Image 1 (cartoon, one colour):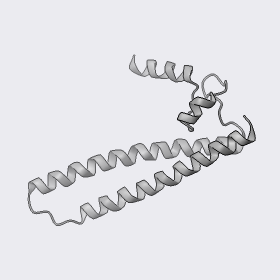
Image 2 (image 1 turned 90 degrees about the horizontal axis):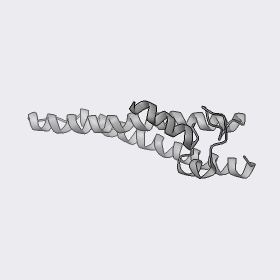
Image 3 (image 1 turned 90 degrees about the vertical axis):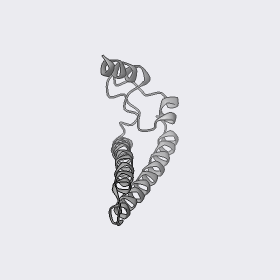
Image 4 (image 1 turned 180 degrees about the vertical axis):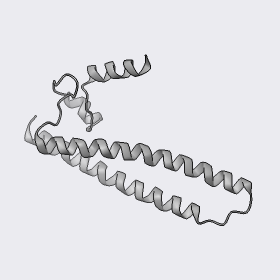
Amino acid sequence: MQQSELKYFKEILEGRKAQIIKNINGVNAELDQLSSLELNDEADYASVDNSSMVESAIVKQQEQELREITAALGKIATGEYGICEMCEDSIGFQRLKVKPHAVYCIDCREIIEKSKKG
């Protein structure tokens, strides 16, 4: 992969990483705010509990994406970025444009998906 392409993906990954950190911090602040509310009845408790569960699920998903982005940035630093972890072929540029923290080429991703379903 060319230096210009690596720079392009590094900037995208760093931007997304900053956005996720901002999102997680915002959700955590919201959750703290929800937990400090004085609730009057069971409906209030249920509403806050439901909101907390949804927000927690979002944070969990974003934390996973953050780990994947951090790993991708590490691969850029070591020169291993854009290499499929399964077949060790290059991951296509278009695939990386869609998911810059992808660890599998499109063929291997399909194999992984099929094995998860079966």
